[in-house]
Structure formats: C-alpha cells, structure tokens
Length: 240
Image 1 (cartoon, rainbow, N blue to C red):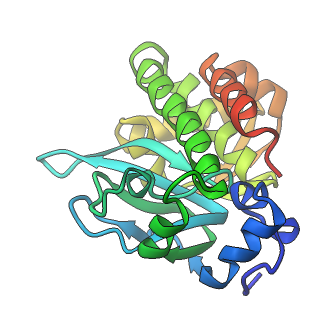
Image 2 (cartoon, rainbow, N blue to C red):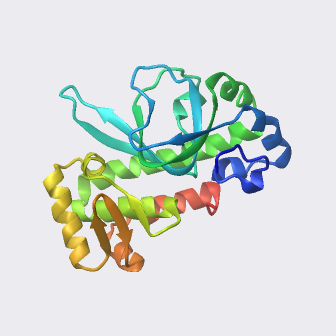
C-alpha cells in the first residue's frame, strides 16, 4: 500500500477500521501514508510530538533511556493502536522515545488535527481511550513479567506478540532490539534464541525470526501473553 485507504474497510490499522464510516470519512483527508523503515524514530524523549502515527504494518517500540545511555523497552504498538498516547492527554512533548523496530508502514496525522478530532466525546477519542486502557494493561503486565519470569519465557512472549501483528510466519527482529526488549546483553539473546531453535519452535537467521511451532511457543511463554491478549480482546475485539 502506498496511499491512504479511502474507506475504513480497507484500512489495515485496526483502531481506525473500528470507526463508524462517517467518522472515518471525516478524518481521511487528514491522514498521510508514510513508510516506517527499521530504526525510524517517531519521537525523542523530551522532544515535540508533531504527528500521531497509526501503524498499518511493522512494530513501534517505546523506549526508556537511562543516564548511562542504555535503553529498555517498556511497551510496543502495532496495527491495533497508535503512537503516541501522550497526545491523548494533551501533552505535546514526548515522555519516552519511540522507534520502529520492525519495518513497515503507517498513516499519520498532524498532532493539531489529532487533538481537534479527539476534543470532546468524539468517536476517535472513545476508541483511543479504549486502546489506552489496553496499552496500560500491557505495560503493567510487562513490569510483573520482567520481575518474575525467565528470559526464555519473556523472549517467547515477545515473539508471539510480534507474530500476532505481522500476520505471517517470518519477520525481522534484530539482536539489538531483542536485547533492549528483554533488558539483557546480546549474548543472552543468542543463547535463548538458540535454545528455542533447538526445540524446533523458531528459526532465527540473520535477524529474521520464523515461527515454526506456534502452540509450542505459547507453551514456552508465560501467562502474561494470554493475560494481555485477553485484555485487548475485551476492550478492542479481534484485530484484523
């Protein structure tokens, strides 16, 4: 796709696709198609938020940066949502950095138009608030997961989440991203990926993961994956 979908039925962002026809038509002129290549930076911490992004494909990673420059992922956004939730609170300055870690494409609109379209009790605002609740469930569950579950379980969980968003078996996940995602050093990523590969659950070559045994990967994950998935289903329904 290299254009803005003219109807919600053909829009691959699940949040926008849930809008009533009339509401979608009111905002379609404000949308711009944009590729989101690997490492594309949507927002920098303490920097201005100039656009709201609605992913069509790929995955956005929300990163917290420490004083020594190290980063850890605190949340992810795919076609089920939008970046950045800061705008929904009327904040035009990014609290965290957001980077595209799985390349794809997105629709975006200016922050000014997003704020106008979510002012008051509008269809877009109601949907975005439901997404915000689901996103916060993801973030809070991740805090518990990072403290209580093994690197292998967390690795399996994040692969499953990415697999849900890609709609195909193979997708790019670099060692750098996986290490940031899990809060570990890169050699640990190699060890965990190798273990899951030896079990026949995934194949990992040249930064590309292929899911070979989805049920087995779910067994290797912790309960956090299903808890978060059920929250998204409850609040937003089945993603396209």
